[in-house]
Amino acid sequence: MRIRFVAFLFTVVVLIVMTPPAATAREQQPDQEEDTSAPSLRIDWKEFRKLYDSNTLDLVDVRGDVFFESGHIPGARSIPLDQIEKHIAELRRSTKPIVLYCA
Image (cartoon, rainbow, N blue to C red; front, side):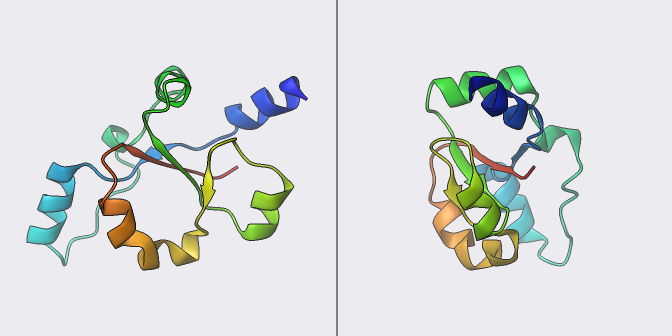
């Protein structure tokens, strides 16, 4: 089970979604889409594990409900990617870095 969990975690694509300065910049220029492939929005495995182990992040699984129910990182909540926009206000209230993942 542990090997399966570790293998699952290695397949995780991790993004840090929002920080207050970035949110402010997006609000000032609403017509420009943020480049989600920017290296500044990604974290590596070691940084993710450090934040995860210290419970200092909000973890969001963006896969569909069926995939989430079949297995997910403990502590993650499910917000399917097609529903993210409905949860933006809720996510912006978070005081922790937000990490989205899919596998």
